[in-house]
Amino acid sequence: MINKRLIREMKSSLVFIYKNVLTQWLMLILNILMMMLIAMTLEGLLKNTLILNQMMLYLAVVIVIVALRSILSKKSVMYGYGASKEVKKVLREKILTKLNEMGSGYHQKIATSSLVQMCVEGIDQLEIYYGSYLSQFFYSMLTPLTLFIILSFVNFKVALILFICVPLIPVTIILVSKFAKKLLSKYWGQYTTLGDSFLENLEGLTTLKIYQADGYKHEKMNEEAENFRKVTMKVLTMQLNSITIMDLIAYGGAGIGMMAALFEFQSGAVSIGECILIILLSADFFIPMRTLGSLFHVAMNGIAASDKLFRFLDEKVEEDGTINDIKTDQNIYLDHVSFAYENDQNVLNDIVMEIKPHQMTSIVGESGCGKSTISSLLMKEIRANQGRIFVGDKELVHFSRKAWMKKITYLSSNALLFKGSVRENLLMAKKDATDSEMIEVLKKVKIYDFLENEQGLDTPILENGSNLSGGQCQRIAFARALLHNSEIYIFDEATSNIDVESENDLMKLVDEMKDEKTILLISHRLMNVVKSDQIYVMEKSRIIENGTHEELLKKAGTYQNLWESQKKLETLKGRSL
Image (cartoon, rainbow, N blue to C red):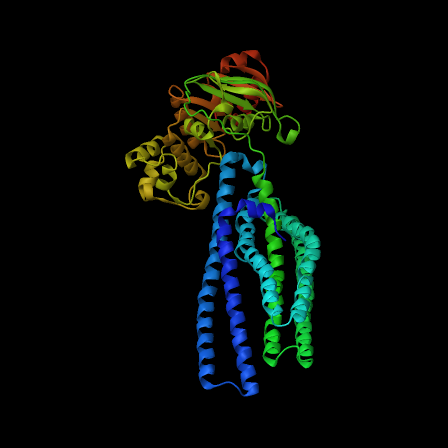
């Protein structure tokens, strides 16, 4: 019923929980006093011994007690909110810190949809665990003990009977928890699976429509939804059955206590007022524990969600480097580097490569040969399984990721434009950029004339740049990369999927940059790499050739074959190579 790690991880929220328990306990004491006054009043009325002044005094005290309970009740809600607010803040900060440690390669460990579900609904479930369940748990332990001590002075036998019946509820909760933990774990597994499928199908809806596979995916999602419905119904059935059992114990136990009080009154062991007091307080023995039982299922759901959360937080992350003073006017050298995902077949095998400063180095090869994996290694998204990467005489792993990101810019074919304005998207690269600096880079990529006819820097951009053409989106993304003004640039198929005019304009800019910047160009179109200072040809995860364009053509190997193939293809398309 209590997850030790959840308690340990959230020490900052314990203060609110303790205050909440104390507040509820004071409300219990006030309630006991009020029940005593009611019992004394009824006894006085039955015996005809109650005078008006005494009744007015009791009434005044009851009014004060009700007022105090109202204040304490409000405080209890505030403490519960404080605990849950602290939990959401701390856990989301931990997740964000973990994501920062993982970098953009986090998706190798967890699906984005699962991460979103965990950050939103999963943490909301834990909000209930901390905001309500924990304080109720400790209060449920205090209440029977407090009532037992007080009623022991009234009648020990009845107090003992009531006290003995109370543990039957937590015993029921413990028995249910063993089954509930497995069921709720399955529930969350089905829930995240359904979310993953939904997001994937939504993102690929156009593709599904093209191949008329949307019906098939629809059926698959229906199956997953049905599985989720079944496990949800099992959870609800379990909750209903356990609540019914706890109700029987709670009301049955209170009834037994009331019957015992009546027998004690019949035998003369207690007065009519004492008998009434016991009857009025019998239910209070069980109500807190019964409330705990109703919160238990929500708490277990939160614990099941926390298991996924802690598995993510426990993911091993390679330690970040500590070197912040990075000199980039040095050779970048890949020394016999190999890499494999999940210890599977290598996607890079024994890569030896040198990227010289203020030159353009290119990587070419068929899709899937490992070109983009090299860029991921250089961006510190992943770490080589074998071999080392040097920048000058220092290993890349020893550099701080934050400091390294200031030195390098990565641009791919699917660079994302965020919803907002052109200005807001550009300022991501340089927060203090002036309008003139932004206009200058937009002019370089030949997009400013278009924007000037719109709203200039304040031209709105819809989600994913849906109100712009592919070439316009890529030009703005390129301008953003230029504004970053880093020493090293990686262009990973940055001009694919756009029109020929945009591609030629952007490649001309890349050629102009190479005298001042260190350029790594990954391109499927060989015309783009002709002016490179060094070209590496990859095939099946290995480098098989390297040299300049002219040198590689003379070798009459793989590069020359690719060149001839593309030459024929682009001649058919009316493009000259």
